[in-house]
Amino acid sequence: MAWTERDSLRPFLFVARLFAWVSAVIVMGVTAWAVTKVDGYRVVYPLVIAALTTAFYIPAMIVSTMRRNRGYMLPLDIVFSYLWLAAFIFLAQHVGQQNCRWFASSLSSSCTRKRTAEAFSFLAFFWTLCAMCFEIFNFYFSGKEGPVGMRTHAEKTPHPEGGRAPADAPADVAQPAA
Image (cartoon, rainbow, N blue to C red; front, side):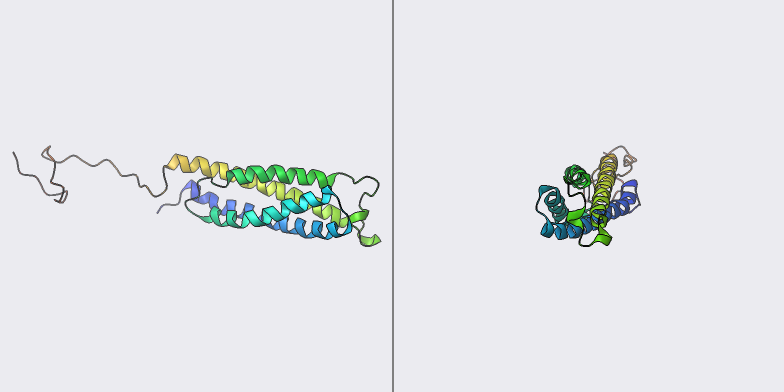
């Protein structure tokens, strides 16, 4: 089989989803630690989105490597890109008078956990957005090439005598003149 434009997108699609998944795992770890320290939707929301991304992007990574992928994960990428954007906004906002204290366990790491969660939530948004763009290109190229598995054949040449060969006869056997 020939290597096509759609095939060249598969590694990029896989890498984008892998990086989004890794970013989600990091955000999930940091925000899970913060949930034990504070109770509020600004920390719980990114935790839930990270957990959902971790669960849904494992099959999405598998599908992105398949040859028959024709843009099936595009709705997932659209939804999660907006969810990650909202998670980034929640983490970037200041939490009243507390600022970074609810992420800090000591004075030396006052805002590092909060900034880590913000940075990786933005990276999860960015890689989900990249996966969405690659999936759109994949959908475009899969429609351009025709259905997967169908080969395009050159038009068959007509029979030399103008008649049709019997169904069970090879193509090079001439049919008797009538």
